[in-house]
Length: 213
Image (cartoon, rainbow, N blue to C red; front, side):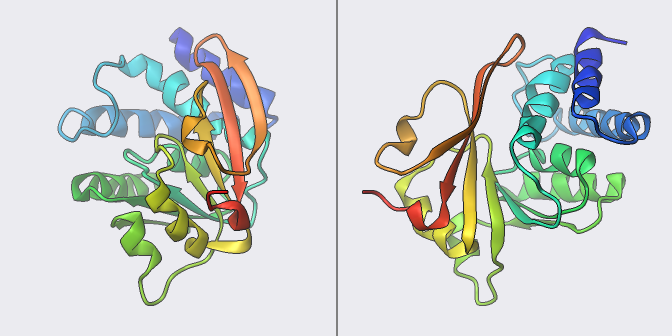
């Protein structure tokens, strides 16, 4: 077993998750789908060796499980790209409702193929800009909006408020820089330093706080 894959499996065991052998089989399938499709559609950086998907994408995505309980929640993955972090979270903790949103049609089409190939239940894909999706006639209402590779621009604040339940919050994966969160009331749910990932933070902003002070 390659080192990165072994590190990922060890992480799953540390989380005390059930059915890890079966889960690893699904992650292996997803790894194959992602690496093959990425040759044709730019879903994740092509400068990253595919072996490192295990830590840089899969393990990193699952850091949120250390500070969030997703069970029974409605979750929007905004700017999902190749299904990250939504698909890894769904594979590890399947008992929540997931919508993956990306404005690029090719990426959305690839994610839909992943959802079908992996047999993910209660999981859908939407190709739209956040601003357009938030103001559709029958808008959904989410407990969580998760953003891994998206800077929080001011134009996103009103759509995020509209999409979240009053009790909901937006959750951001961050490294060292938090400059896009300046002027906002946020809390750090998790802060860790990882040998493969470097410094990582999971940052949350409540629905009512998604406005500049």
